[in-house]
Image (tube, one colour):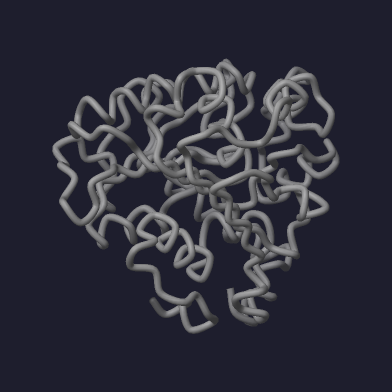
Length: 294
C-alpha cells in the first residue's frame, strides 16, 4: 500500500482491521464446519457454482487463506476484484480444530492439502475446466505445494501464486505475531496446533516438502513478497528456486508500498495487480504505485 498504510500498522488500526475481518467472517461464514463442506456463494460474487469460465479466463481461480484466516476474511478485497474481471472464483476453509470457530489453518498441513485436493476436484467438476489457478496467502501460498508434489495436483493446476508464502518456514515467534491481528484467537487455541509447528523452519513437514526441489514440472510459480514482512522472516526465504518461477519483491515495483505480512494478502491492491498479471500473463501491464487505483 501507499504511505498512508503506515498508519494501519498501529495497534488501533490493527484492531480495527481485525474487527472488520471477523465481522465479515461472522456474516458470511456461519461455522467453519459448514463452510468446509459447502462454501456459500458470497455477496461479492465468488463461490458461485453456476459460474462457467469464459474464453478470456478459461481457468477458475481457487483462493487459499492463511493461518488464522478463513475463506471470507482473507479475500474480501481480492475475490470481488477478480470476479469483476470475469473470473470464476472460489475459496475454501481448511485446517479447522475442534471447538475453534472462525480461525482456521491450524490443523496438520498434509491434511489441509488433502482438503484442497477435494475442493479443486469439486471446482473442476462444477466448471468443466481442465485446470485451476491457485492464489494463496501465507500458509495458503505454501500448503498447495504439498498438493502439487504428493497428491496429484500438478496435473490439475496451471499456476501457483503465493502472497507472502512461508515456503521454507519461519520461526514460531514469527507465527505468533499473527495473534495481534486476530483478537481472541490465542484464548481459543490449545497447545496442540500442528498447523503452526508444521510451518516452523526445519520441521519434518517442510523438510519432506522441499526435498528434491521447490517446484514440480508443468506449473508456473509466482511469489509476491514484501520487505516489511514481520511474520515470515527473512522475507527472501519465501522465494522459490526452479524453472517457471517468478519471484517478486513488491517494493521493487513500488518503493512506497509499506504493506507487511497480513496487508499484502488482504488489502494491497498493488500486490493484487501483480496477481492479475500472473493469472493472465498474455495481457500483463506494468505494476507501479499507480496500480493502487486499479
